[in-house]
Amino acid sequence: MATGIKDKVAILGMGCSRFGERWDAGSPELMAEAFEEALADAGIGREQIEAAWFGCYGDAVNVGNSAIPAATALRLDGIPVSRMENMCATGTETLRAAAYAVAAGAVDVALAIGSEKLKDTGYGGLPTPFKGTFNDLWMPMGSAPAGFAQLASGYRARHGISRDDLKRAIGHVSWKSHQNGQHSPKAHFRKPVPMETILRAPMIADPLGLFDCSGVSDGAACAIVTTPEMARALGKTDIVSIKALQISASSGRETQLAEWDGSSVPNTRNAAARAYREAGITDPRTQLGLTEVHDCFSITELVTMEDLGLSDDGRAVFDVLDGAFDRDGRLPCQIDGGLKCFGHPIAASGLRMAYEIYSQLLGRAGGRQLADPSLGLAHNLGGVPYQGVAAISILGLMGR
Image (cartoon, rainbow, N blue to C red; front, side, top):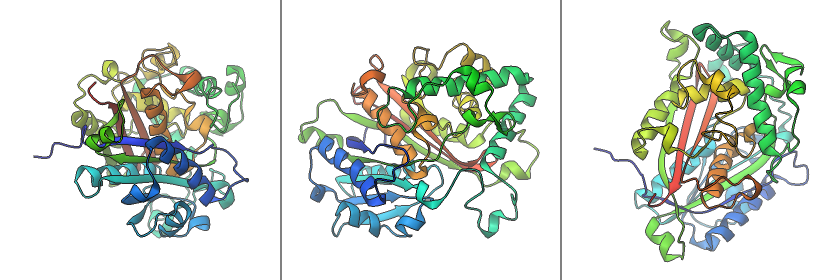
């Protein structure tokens, strides 16, 4: 019987570029910015990396369709380098591939890197950019804000939440992220935003206003992984290990049957159940110390807290308004400002979230640092609530 990869893979080093409108850098420079930080953190040379996985989803105009641009930019000569794309779960997919290679004993040191320079593509976030011929049959007029606005409608209808309560709660989600993001030097947006400004912002897709939507950014993030034994041999004492990595992809079942009411994201629940089992977590509300969840829209973060079992069904609105997920709440969420402040260079986001948890676990988060966290969870949701990919990574300190 499979036992998972808990504590079989250590993170040797991580790096993250500054996110934002990076007109000063091309895709190779963004990748190198994150990679050089990770190499220095790991304390190894690039020649010690034995395999790499490169994630890039919406930036083909800059990097094409192979892994060669990553191998070239990072000067990874002659080793296997593969390109991956799996919507907004792409960054976590690269980490999963690298971790599985180490856990399987195929290589000792592997690299996961995600990079996206979306501002060059002209992508503004509102059109449906990646339909393909198949999706034209299912959602010809779909857009991301509309898809997640439907989640808000389903949630309200299922739990009898008033429009005013939901609007105030999702406004609090955005307000919280902007409060936290001012302490993140690598974030795109670092300015606190008053609640009144958030609530009175122009409507994008009811009830989602302008400040309920994450921005479009450029950025890159990466991780170098190895075995715990090799990490110790390289002089690491405080070791961050991978406790769980799980992916759940929708078959489209939600849209084809009447058993789903649109109030939750089944894929997140599936991935969370498997991740908690792999990590040995029985009570995530007390065992987790922080979370980074996919706040492409504020309603996504709110519903995700229920999908992850961190709020009872129908209670996340009130937990959010009570400050349960604020920086000083019972389980801080988006302590770095999340997608709301970093923007969403798609393939980089999952690794950027892991970077924040890694930094917090090692006490390196500066003005954002939480008191003694030992276990953190990062969550991505690609696609739309009714057909997408959910990814969960759980990181923790070895031996705790």
